[in-house]
Length: 493
Image (tube, rainbow, N blue to C red; front, side, top):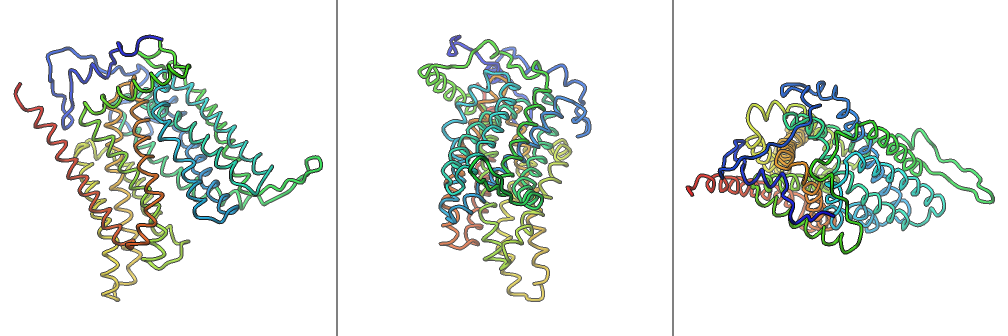
């Protein structure tokens, strides 16, 4: 294996010559720099094109369809795991363990996965990971048929499936700019965020119920054994088929478009000692790379912060509907549906917004609007309780606020993801996105474990005020951090 410590990455050469501040390239040393190469096949897409233009790019269309189907399957499988564990155990603690089983792998393994993603052809990583996840889903079905009274097999296979996803996610993120070019990143990432939202709604909320409606429970004989098939078992079978479809979609992308550039001559580490040395070196190198670019460092934490906030919203939505609005939990769409519409609408408008106002300004507005929204949601209930004549408008107010907050979160998330892509070159992009995944999951597990208990102890309204204050303080810190970078660049010498 070539000596990685002597390797000068293309991304490092960029940082020696350029450091973006407020969207402008500011030279810091007198040295010629190499721009990131854009694939020749992306030139057909103009910077003023539409989503329709993006989808005319066949390789991107195949990747997008694979993302839509695989993410829908992933969310449906997560729903199935939670539902089956609830059905088997009836324990909230066991459900928490189930959630952790498909969250925990990202912490120790995501960065290691990024090392391999940066060395291997992205197409290979994508289709193999989809094929392995399909196999894992079929094993879940067999495990449930063999012993439907234990959740242990489900925990193990959920962990393995999530482990495989640690390779798929950074490979997919690193593939987008290779297929569309940097000039189309905002539109491409906006489209991916739209489908991510749709896949969460369809996968987690609709697909399980649809399969239960279409496929009733049935039994069949296998030798001397009678096997009972429940609708949720068929859900995992359908998800396995979805992953197989994604495998063939990815195989339709020309392998040459997803080659690794400078890293193509390296082979992945196989021996344990070699793997450990490579992991330590690449983690250190990725951390230094992120830290040296203030815009990249900030965008990485902003994307992670948005992910944790979305998880908090998911955790608090049910108690908010039940304990604050005093509605049955079946009325969760009152909160989720308008927020989902806001997410989709903002994603559709994001290319125009960023071109007109700039990424930084859009992100600041989104962050401030989200923080204020967390204050206005619970405080509005005080107004409605004091002025009974306004009570009929309560649900309209809640729907409007969640719509605005959904759009505001996209105003922070999509530009931050775009900056992540723009400030990482091909040779480190997989590791950077894996590092971000590790940070997100490391932050999300404490949220899963403690946010419910904190809300039960101090009240959900106080927790929402605290979250709103945290978001505003985070934006204040981000503004000062960004301004500190500009001031540092302006200093002579």
